[in-house]
Amino acid sequence: MSDGPILVRLRRNQSGSQWGFTMQGGYDQGSCLYIQKVNPKSIAYKSGLRVGDGIIRIGNTPAQYLNHPDAKMEIIRAGNELDFVVQRNVVDLGQGDHVDAQLSHHVTESSQSTVEEESTAYRGYTNPNVQSRSFKILQQSLNYSEASGSV
Image 1 (cartoon, rainbow, N blue to C red):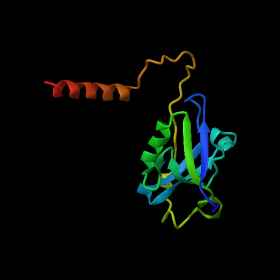
Image 2: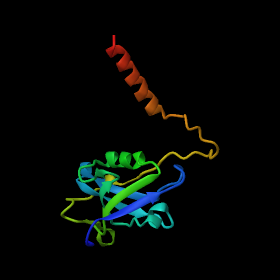
Image 3: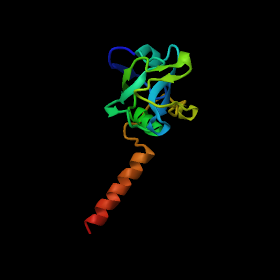
Image 4: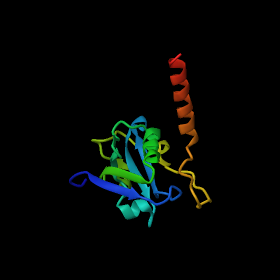
């Protein structure tokens, strides 16, 4: 392992652009979160993310106790500005998938995933007043609870 944690900042202009990495592990898998694959020439590669990096933080969220699905949600929630704090060479994928004993007990294949976001073919005008369906549902439920609470 290297001396200390490293901040890796990933930035993209459009949400349709893939980050270009595969993450594996998670608290629910009995393994630390780590970078299993980095595509050459990808945003992740150009930003300095490397295979074997152990993920310490995703944005402002500590990754030590994050389940794999929760880690994916943190990455998606980051939007187009994704920051990782990583520890180099936590996982040695060239030596039979060895995971640093200090951070993990074992690695399972089922814990591997690539964070994929829906891409759209349309790249024209984007309406700034458009809200996601999830946000609309949340807003409606908040308005409903406020209305029923004031009666």
